[in-house]
Image (cartoon, rainbow, N blue to C red; front, side, top):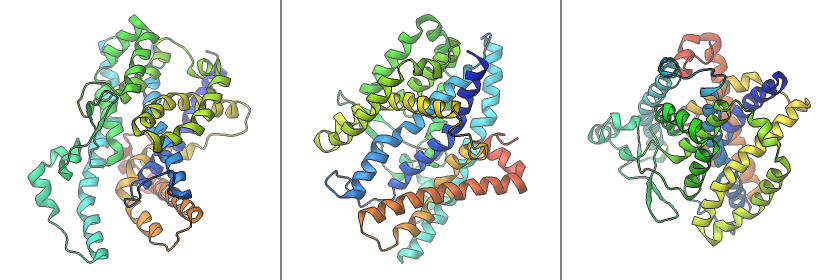
Length: 379
């Protein structure tokens, strides 16, 4: 891979980081509309959410897994136990410490937000701490559905129940699953060396039909996309150059799928979920293609401030500002579809910007605190 293409590839990753973080915020903004039934016949706003949050935005976390896999093995000239231990020691700081801290913050913040909600609604507040004590404090660091008193699961194409769930800081299921998959990187490296792309194709098929080991925290989504990104680094190939070989086909499939998939939402929900899983890797290739071309021709450029704050934004938005912003936005008396779409976008942008400027503030006045919360990413 040429030096110029390495630069373009690196810039593409940096450009996409805040975009994918914003998509994650959109996914979580959707969760505040608890009274919506989400139907293609439910008006302009519901169609907008089905297109954006059910079809387009699910690419965000898989993209992060892909990037993580690529970067973990990037520029490795050798692979042995010593190198693996060195990398895992680094991830202890960059992933595990922030994971613990943000979930602890979320646990502390939860009773506060519940108290504020009880005041606004004029209803008595339940004893949250007794609930935490009864259901297990440490469980909240792995799966908050245990705290909520329910089990979170989906049904795959064979009708099997597939467990899912999030820790107390909801978005950090990505970090949880990433930490787990990192433990298996020696096996992933060996399988890719022995089987090459065949191994990744097999994982892709398992991802599409959603068949995997039924253990929460060890998901096929993390395994497949992390391994896919790893494939390019281990084989010493540029994923940008590889994706560009079929860019016309990928672009055609992307827009055709975008037009077709939401229609399945009303017809067959399981067929919809399956086609979305096919759409996700297509979307990854499409976004890397289009962004890399625009960067290469200097039509766009990387905002390094936004790129550097993306991890902080990702970790903080559900804990710190989402509830307050969405409560304010959703309390506005607008019922027209176009106004609700506008307020949805405004809410997501406000959440992103508030978290971004909190990052800037901490970087300026409390860099040591920010270092802990981001795993040293701002040092």
